[in-house]
Picture 1: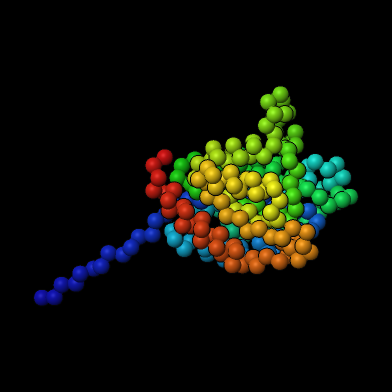
Picture 2: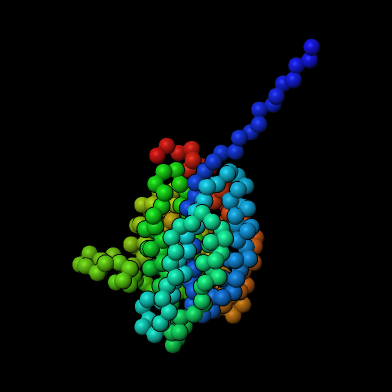
Length: 239
């Protein structure tokens, strides 16, 4: 009599990841929006490489709160687990601000809003992706951070750094020119043993206006793979 021995099949670990895209949506950024859309399927495929990732995506398309000549509102969406819904949000974004002069945008405000997203509380890897081709204003706008005596003292990059460092299982992914405040944020995350990945582009280089010189497909694929791999660590951590 012959016996057949069944080999045990390896079970893929199921993990959770919440990802927030903070996307500069001012006039120069249409190439970036198109690039993210182009790389979105590869990003989703990358998310499933190391684990079976139950993911949610959020989009914050920000502009300039600090400049009164910017007359276009932000486009802010809550989390979705539907890739096509996220793609439809991107399709709605108008890359415009109508401001008189190009300059720093409200990236810190977008990061603050992202940090205070409605994250899933348990065993969830949290990623914030910042995509911009310009500098940020050094302070948070009163619309973002409640104006009171304490807020006047900590409405700057230190507020963002502190909130990042207090967010468990967090990763920051930056695609931007290497302006000092972005560098400071990246260094602070590294010093606090939080994961940070920065893809720096040249400043004041017309090839990178709107991040036009970025090869989005491999970058988005890599981001998905990193989130997938890191989510495994989170899934094994006791909350």
